[in-house]
Length: 366
Image 1 (cartoon, rainbow, N blue to C red):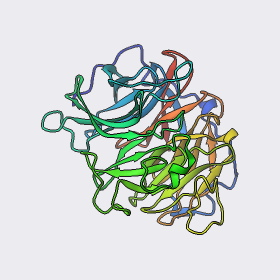
Image 2: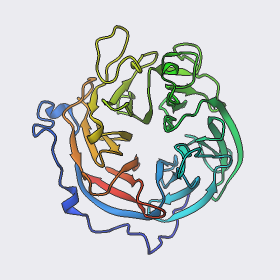
Image 3: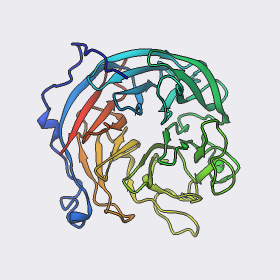
Image 4: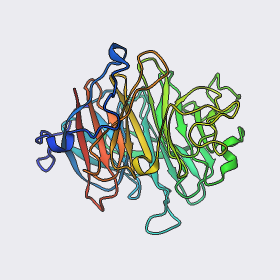
């Protein structure tokens, strides 16, 4: 797909805000214990990349890497964002309903995931997750590079409830679609392996259970409260960020068939058969929304915490190092985050500044 012509209102090469880039370190020893086992790198600069957004929920790059699609939760809009900073509105996802509740309710347009074989001609499939008046669902639309058409439900009937809708979509290295779902404020659903709620699902492009799923249905892992972030490391392992109830938020390493404890456990616990998180945060410094991985380091955006967390992975092991925080309070709530293909960069979206006042930032990793 050809890049769009840059619009002058967007700052693609803005001066890095060096004061904001200085980290506030949660643990001064950082990665010392990991040494060469960790690829490393850390945020070295941040600039305003794109402006005039309203609560961007997620950013997902097209397979060719020349542009990304971004969703706005409460406007239901989808936009294409080019590598040059150009922005084009593509339309809205039909039947999206954020309410009930004021001012917007707690649902809306959530995740987006282009088909990994999208080419704009023989494969035009792009997948969205959104709430309707009755449920949360995964849908497919056709995207020809200019507009969205042909709304088709792929997986319906996921219960919706308040702000516990999960919402992240991502195609894994295996080519299957992973879907994070919340417990819909019905805690028991998270432990019910026949329910779609409180889970990470693994499905085909048609919405069927993916081959090899641990329980023979769509469920890949369970015992989740409200997972909203999914990303794979260099070894193909799946990591998830999950919002807790008020005690602990979690960073989890996801394995097929594993039980992550909710509602019995929040944070680490010693209950047999339940899997502990690799990292936890108190809500005041967390409420993690999404995550991305650059050079084997996990970056977690946070809402209430209003900061970006850097968490290194211990090489090929299943441990993580000490977390370091960046941009505390500088940009407000942070949600959408994506690694830029082929670059040591992140695109990072602010959340909740008001209509057309949110930003997408470019974070350089060195």
